[in-house]
Structure formats: structure tokens, C-alpha cells
Length: 121
Image (tube, rainbow, N blue to C red; front, side, top):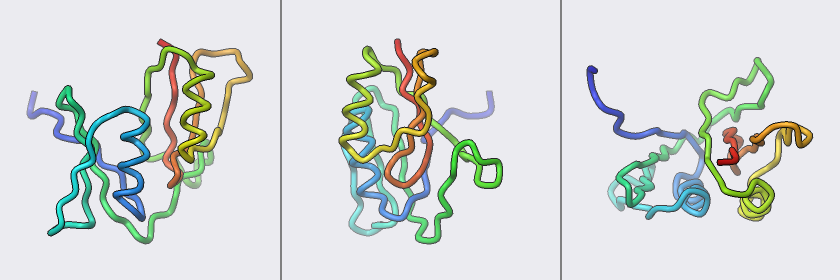
């Protein structure tokens, strides 16, 4: 091993807004640094974190379009896909692919367009 994973970082136009979206999805506390408003951290109790970096010219991914690839994605494990879907949609996510009920995961885009999956536990 060369090192340990420090954080996963998402580029976005509004770091605070996207951090708050993911705080509602996976939990954690949004940490702002008044000296660096272009960067926001979401820190969870288990020590994992997500970073959000301002990228005003972000060209959002369009899953599954290879011309605008997903760049990264997260899998969020949930107990109930239907309930979780309702909740992320209410937060501003967009359903991209529900698998027509034939699999145990669904693909969404966060409010900025980054794909993420809800996966049944």
C-alpha cells in the first residue's frame, strides 16, 4: 500500500449545496472554511468524508453517454429501494435508470448531474 484514501472529491458549481444534498443522503456534518469558500467537506461519524470543490465551468456528466462520461460514481447501500428513491428525489436527485425492477440497484444523478446508485442491502 502506498497510502490511504483521504477523501473522494466532487467538482460542482456550489460546494455547500451539494454537500448538504449528500449529508441528507448518507449522513454527516457539513464543514465550511470561511477562508476557503470554494471547498466544503462532509465528514461522517465513522471518519469517512467527501470533499466538494467549486468548479464554475463544470460540464456535467450524462450517464450513460460516452461523450460525457460519469467521471466517478458512488454506491449508497439502503434497506429499501423505494423509500430511498422517494427521499433522494425529494432532495433534488433525478432518476436515470430504474432497471425496470429487474435488479437490486437504481441510478440517479445528484442536483449537479453526478451519477450515484442506490443499492439494496
